[in-house]
Image (cartoon, rainbow, N blue to C red):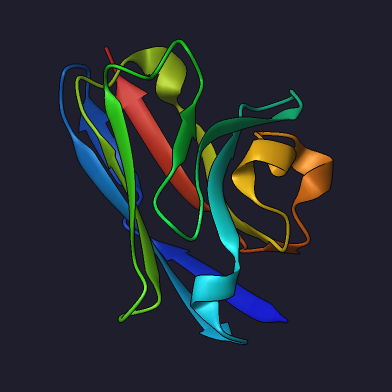
Length: 125
């Protein structure tokens, strides 16, 4: 088992940038695929980006050009760099871990077993 903890959320104006970090404790971090999800108020949680243990990535099409996911297996951290933020990016962002490789887990919420508590991102126009 692993325990993800998110940090780095906050408020920013449209066009700005934020960096989210997820610190993972517990089991061997490098054995897990990791992902960022987000949940807009009143909506279902949706996948944003995922990264395999070997660095292979998946992105939502609508954020591919603006967000970058990366991981540091030595520091047990996962990062989401978010640039050119838009008001519709406002959401609670969650870090999640899966024992499945990304080519199977993709950005499907049900494929991820371990979740953080979330960090709020608010983008104002």
